[in-house]
Image (cartoon, rainbow, N blue to C red; front, side, top):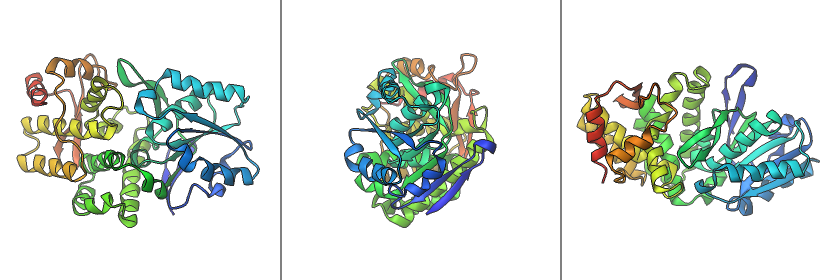
Length: 359
């Protein structure tokens, strides 16, 4: 097992990465104020891992309340959030009850927001079961739900007390979901870690084959990058916004196509290619950089071409973004591989040309 610390003062927490962590109740027990937990999961993960995770806790005398939600991005909304509140209230959960997210990014975001708001805040632990959630969404305290008009527009910053990333859960991950997670791994190389990007180029086939050593390294290095950024800028007032490379374009794709039609990582990959194209037009990337970025996404079995929503539709949806300031769409752009910047200082016509390429 490898362990990282997210350094946030008195709200610091550990990320454990390794095999067979789900059954190691001793990793969780020290964090329980009360021997009662609510485990939030979904209809896909529950048959695979709910009992494996819950039984060791029960054996240690912990009361486990299972809350099983429908699976999919389409359910990351207020209706599903209320299902969590309903279960917590019916079981008379108190402020000392720990809420645990067992699942991917949707479960983590929903559960975290429920924990942040139920009784104005209850303890929260992340147990991510997808690659995307292990390298990105479970770390950093972003929680929330989607709104019909925009993705992740309702939420709170609420840090977990612990993150357990069990590599064994990746063996049951569909190929498409694995690729979606790799989009976020690639992101860290592009925004701030050129050596990691080069390592990915040399090891992508090992990652797709779930090689234990390669995957463990990729998750650790990704979490290390994110932990450093979050420690420096927890509430996204500066550097943390760089973690949204490709996301402003990508969220527009997810919204327009219908939540869940394009997986988050797929939309981020296509969005990153759009950001790269605009960066090229600004003279910050050359064609060989574009080729390298497109090649690694293609190797990861991710889309490199965005859908044709129409220029005006893209601009409208991109305006519903948390990085908009004074009505200006701020974008994460590339000044080289391993170097990124948040900027609204770009030619609007160049952006339109980039958007017009989508087909």
